[in-house]
Amino acid sequence: MFVISIAALKRNTAILREVKEAAGCNLVLALKGFSCWKAFPYIREDLDGCCASGLWEAMLARDHFGKHVVTYSPSYDGQDIAALCEFTHHLDFNSLSQWFRFREQVMAHPRFKSGELLCGLRVNPQHSTGHTPIYDPCVAGSRLGITADQLQGADLTGLSGLHFHTLCEQNSDDLETTLAAVEEKFGHLLRSPQFTYLNMGGGHWITKPFYDRDRLVRLVRETREKYGVEVWLEPGEAVAIHCGVLRATVMDVFESAGHKLAILSVSATAHMPDVMEMPYRPDVFLADSRSSGTASPCVTLPGESYHLAGESGEHTYRLGGPTCLAGDVAGDFSFPRALEVGDTLVFDDMAHYTMVKTTTFNGVKHPPIALQHEDGRIEVIREFVYADFRDRLS
Ligand SMILES: Cc1ncc(COP(=O)(O)O)c(C=O)c1O
Image 1 (cartoon, helix red, strand yellow):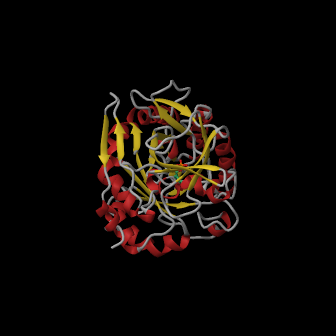
Image 2 (cartoon, rainbow, N blue to C red):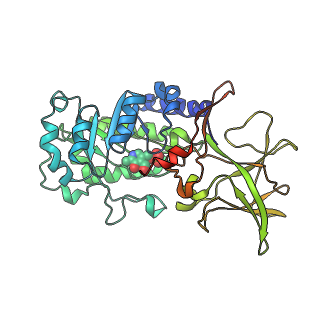
Image 3 (cartoon, rainbow, N blue to C red):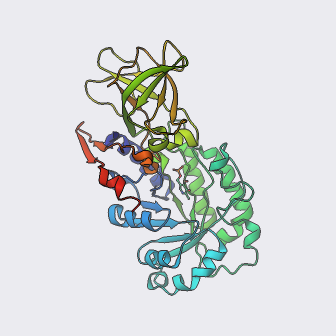
């Protein structure tokens, strides 16, 4: 079961609110990172709306969050544009060819004419600061965003915003050097009165304890003053980090070629795909009421104590999922005692990105989803049944 803590979400959004108020900018939730909409009523107040990656996320934002809808997609079709023009507030394009293709349609819309709908371009400042190539939109040949040379001499009539997204789990020092690259390549556009907003994307790890929020506030303020633009931030991870866990049951335990193996009720490939894609090693806890624990995951249940798994030791198990994929393995984890069928293992920090990326590969059962309310009450908000699997593809 995925369990999301409302208290933890509110702790994050309170920080985000404080930062955006100090900086004088708008801050929206990137739905690609967290779109469990039954939690939206608890965080709506603190944020300015949602950032959508296309029509369906934009509709979810409109229907369940309200406030501002800021949409950017690497590509739209004519139907997307017609639908989005009815309600999105920003419509950001990834290429000049997409903008030229839909410019007339958008500019003829009454909401564009009245100024309710603004259009922007995603730019690529060609300034890499990240460490994981698949998360770097500034790599040579990137398909994400327009480079400065492509803009030279282009007719930009109708556009009023620029958008960049270049960070991933980064501190504000990387934003500072990115803004210097933006100034160098696109500063002349931002200075012109035609451009009224700058969207600085996501990847800002604002709610991490070590994140330098004062610097972010300073950078946003300086940007607003320098260019006279509205600034938008659209974090996903910073909203839902340390807010949810995935609870798994040990289904089987046996040995093969000297390895202790545990088959779990959850799958790495189907339910925690980033563990394999990124890849990364999650924190795993054994929930145990028999002995007192030493550390806790971000969501705990009454009566349970927890033992954080280590890397080696007598009771080291390879934790695998119930699918056919040989590599459906979350890693080797060491526990203070032998695992038994029926034990509960808790995978920490599984709310952001993990939940939006799950699949039913192999027909594995999708874990139910629950909210933990501030009074400790657990509310199961979604249980999955056979029909959910059956009806997805036909
Ligand atoms: C355009 C855009 N905006 C916002 C985000 C959210 O980023 P994060 O969840 O790292 O804050 C992403 C993530 O990929 C993105 O591509």
